[in-house]
Length: 168
Picture (cartoon, rainbow, N blue to C red):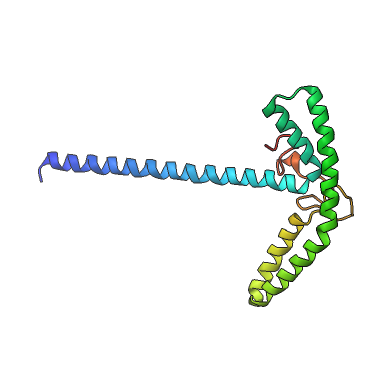
C-alpha cells in the first residue's frame, strides 16, 4: 500500500471514530435528559397525589395563566373549585371501602399464583401502590402521608418534592 492510501484509511478511521463518539454522546444526552424529565414529571404527579388539598390552587393558577382570567373570575373560580373539591372528596371517601375491598381481593388472588420470593416483592410493590391510590386527602386521620418525613414536612426544602405552585 502506498502512503496516500494509508493516509486515507487513517482519516476514514478518525472520521468514523468521531461520528461514533458524537452518536454516543447525543444518545447518552437524550437518555439522561429523558430520565430526568420522567423523574421530574413523576415527582410532580406524586406531589399532587399526596397533596390533593392543593389541587384546586394548582388548577386555579394554571387556568388563570392560560386563560388570562380577571381577578373577579379567579375569585369565582376559586369558590366553585373549592365547593366541588369538597364534594369530590366526600364522594371518594364514600366509595373508598369498596375500592379497598376490591384491591384486597385482587391482591389475594394475585398472591396465590406467585412464588414466596415473588410474593415478598409484590407485597412491597402493592403496599406502595395502595398508599398512593388510597391516600385520604384533607382528613387528618393520624396516618403518615407517603413521601413525608417523620417530622411531617414534605422534603420540599431539600429539593425532594416540588414546591407548591411550582409543580407544573
